[in-house]
Image 1 (cartoon, rainbow, N blue to C red):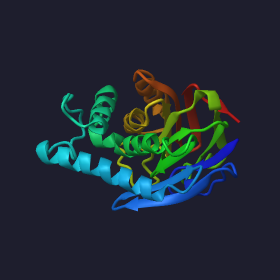
Image 2: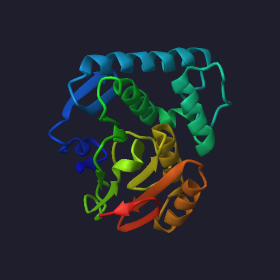
Image 3: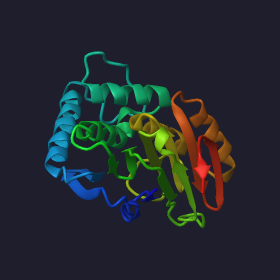
Length: 242
């Protein structure tokens, strides 16, 4: 089983199978931690640059793409990564950039699969993983007393999977809510990222945990949700706690 402590920079304190090599890839604001069967930093850098360029070029012709907090209309002519972001934002009711970290993690991971049959790409706490072993996710939630006390396992047969987080108290993600951590799992990391933002926006206090889960559970493609605020937690779906 592979282990991962999740969200903000502490998620990088993790151990993988000895067959995997971990390395960082940084391009401007994009800061990836990647685990693969060999060091693929050069491949990863080229992949990141390609997708960043596609997003930036699209934003030049659609100037609200980078700033909108609401979904934008779908565009059949957009690059594949932008289409994925638009679909995720429409499904989740948030702006397309709410899905960017998950989208880049997933698209880079898929590119690298031609060089490594097992891969984990983490981008700012948002993860896309394909492994032959189970993946254990430890939940870090800032100052919450539940931080680092909870973990769940994703079975190898359920991978690949996107596992993404939103937090109002940890890291740089923009949240309109108050949750210490919202973790969402989905086959699409872009969708998991956007949905985590939508759920987090709905959680203003502990009484809103159910409200947030209701929001997330209505998003097609969301397979599991964990919401932590203070000492309270709620969960939904395909979450197997350890």
